[in-house]
Image 1: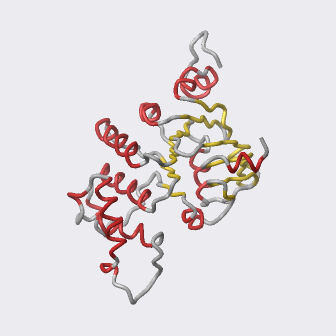
Image 2: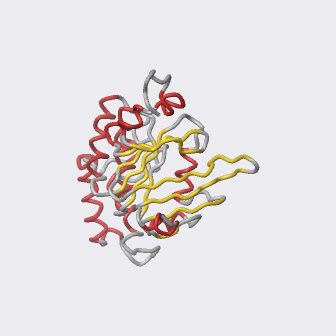
Image 3: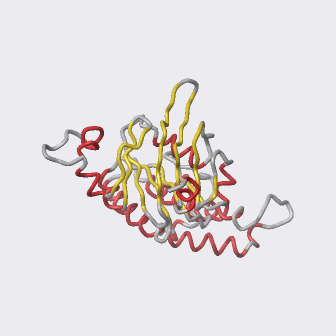
Length: 260
């Protein structure tokens, strides 16, 4: 398949993506294709380059070489706000919320730009009915209606993560990147988060970085394994679980007789 065809037929398509910091190559020729509506997990040991790859896709870092396409549009090294307007939104490992604004105000702020509102001293934000309605819908989706007026900084950690996910999806982006969405959670909190992620990303394309393999196998349709800046395997959860190469590189000692 030609390069253009590969980039046009997927929600996300990375072709020979590389990233160097000085003389050190962190991402070493990554090829990754994610079809629309797929939930795809990116796993790998610490230092494998997962967050760097997220930063390349979302525009926080420029690509050293290679190409990245979003729904057939070349987004290679474009600014993050441009990529967001084209339909990609992401969360971060560390909560990225406004702690001194209420839950509702956080969600309302997240939809202003996508609804076409720019900086203005002549509009009352409370009068923006479409922004209010969009924020209310998201509030209901993430199950924080009873925390509507609570300051975001006063929420529990798990609630803050839910709010972060709400902010990420509020723009209506078709492609969602979640960076370790359940990190630091208890098992019961993780179970709630998995149900939330499954529900709010229905019909969307999801790419997530996650260390909890239970979460990965519960959520992902497909999994890619990144080791030392290279994708060493991609496949269904069952294929990844049984891969001798993956077991040796990441999941532990391979079981005798497993196929690669």
